[in-house]
Image: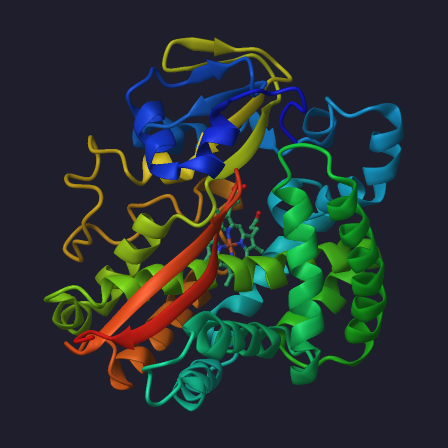
Amino acid sequence: MPSKNAITNTYDEMARDRTSAVHSLLSSCSPLRDEEAGSWFVADHETAKKALALPGLLPRDSENATADLTDAQRRRVRPLELHLGRWLAFSDRKPQRDLRQGVRRALRPGADPARLDRLHGAAHRLVPRPLEGSELVADFITPFTVEAVTDLLGAEPDSGPDLLAWGADLVAYLGLDRYREEVVERALDSLARLELHVAEWTRTARGAVPDAIRSALRHGATGQDATAAFAQLLTGGVEPTRSALVTGAVSLTSVGHPEAFRRAPEGYVSEVLRVASPFHFAPRTAGSDLQLRGTRIPAGARVSVVLCAANHDPARFASPESIDPGRPLRDHLAFGHGRHFCAGAGFAEEMLSAGLEALMEAGLGTENIRVTPRYERTAGMTRAATLTVGHGLC
Ligand code: HEM
């Protein structure tokens, strides 16, 4: 959590107006020290990529994240911090390394060859017809992403709404820019429920992902490690994919875009991810004194690698706001880079492709369809709120 005393800082600015925050970061030096935020910010594409590959730049550190809390607040959030400290993205310890390896293997298409067919089947079954009058986040994007991720996890389909709510509460805590008791309380309650759910799931679920987690449990991972891996797969799978699907659906209503998507779906999806950049930062801590582009970052300092800024860096991407499927694939940093590169990147791209394809088949991209998106931004994330569909000629 950034400084609770902050008046205005890069985190606040990112939540208030992401475009302006990105612009201001990219026109400053990088790395940039923001005293108000209590963090270094690395914004340009070249340095961000270099930083993410540095072995001395360690994952999010709980001490740093809670440095501005009172002792009582720190005691209150301890179970949440212990939980987040076990997420694959936030740990390089042995149980997480084992889990990471198993999960990555389980997420490869070859681990479940029918997964892709089920994904496309779900997209076509769930897409509303006609599109006009629907609110696509509630009517399609959420049920589709939740079904895809519960299928991937081998979880009971009817557990989707509970899982979604618990995951959202944990992400809300993670995205807090200052202590808020009601958010902490909800996250603690959801964590307790999730722990019970995962204990049962590890006993009964079928599929490549639960098999991978059971195997890690046999090799020293604990139930809490399993809960953390499950939580990350769940939240990582649903929240950013929903957000990117909204961006993709909106861009498909621009002239020439449906054709561009049909011609080069992989390039188009890669560009949607770059422009959407749902996770704004990769949070890190300097494990030792580091030199980054001639600047010394002291050991223990908090470092935010600004993925959404790197993805809009005009030095790397000419006309960064425009979707150009001809750019090199996955040149963006929306999935991070280095040893914590997103384990679900391929699956996320498949979900986006299947979702956009189904929307186009239902009429998105034709002249008479108009969409209006609404996003919710926190310092750390752009979330999809609503996407209403109306008639373009009205
Ligand atoms: C648009 C969709 C997605 C985006 C933008 C995204 C973004 C990211 C980013 C930026 C990281 C690295 C975080 C860091 O370095 O601090 C990450 C890690 C991770 N993501 Fe994703 N993700 C997406 C979808 C998914 C999906 C579908 C899954 C699985 C169902 C998933 C599972 C994970 C996991 C397990 C990690 C941790 C990897 C590790 O540290 O070994 N993500 N993701």
